[in-house]
Length: 383
Image (cartoon, rainbow, N blue to C red; front, side, top):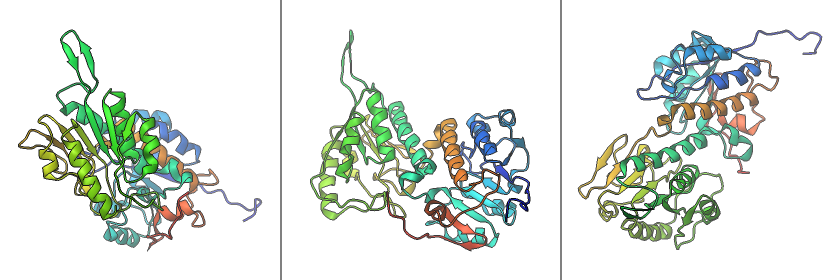
């Protein structure tokens, strides 16, 4: 199509829908992220009340330039959680959906979406390459969750995190062990350290030691070899490593006040790090936050979505909504990641959504395209 004969299409509409899962406080766009969406040439329509649980009123979206109305009828629907069957039926044929999908865990969802003849971008399929970091919602949410895990632990712990010398006596600082120094673990190390605790961290990858130290933590090396990851995600550990780590965790359990575990392996149940015997070795009043509770838990005795107090007085926190407990912050980062992904799929900034399969990032996140399942994508080398 030449410039002389180009037809001017009206801009496509981006719809921001309300989340239907009970307890979900996040929203896929905030008033602040509406403006850059308009800047990409789109019209933006927000479902009434979509931002209320995050503290964003309809008026704030309208002031940012969005209209309030029927968001499910839009050309590109933005969402946080995977859609229900009823929600899939509300999508327009030929529309695009951008949301967390969980393609590895939900093949039947992909089939249902393909049958609807829509294109689906899965936010949890962003490749771990440097160019895609600005779109990586899993990292954004893990960062918030790691911070919130420390806040929950501090709330449940009956003492100061920081050491103090007062007229009423000397108070020692709390000791915190963070298992796993990925995005969530590093956020937890930084938050606990900033509250004045003594922080220690374990991780199978010795290359994270410098990051742990830069955030004020001490890196505890497990005395066993472990291969480097090739795709940027955690991999299963070796038997030798597991045995050595188990000894270290048992030793630390009797010494620390707070344990925060963050170990996940994509597409598999979470690895067990602390046994019931380790928890029994902890002092009364100690707190464990198991950030892998939704995937089966790193800690024996954790219950997903609940807080449990053991017979020996240890509080086990298994909340699965840590990021949603900072709704305004989570929505802002989530929404910004979405804007960055949409910018990639709107190369002309002309309000026309067009996925380019020659681009490795767009290929990786597209799990359904025009009625066909396109997941899994070809492997992407980490950079």
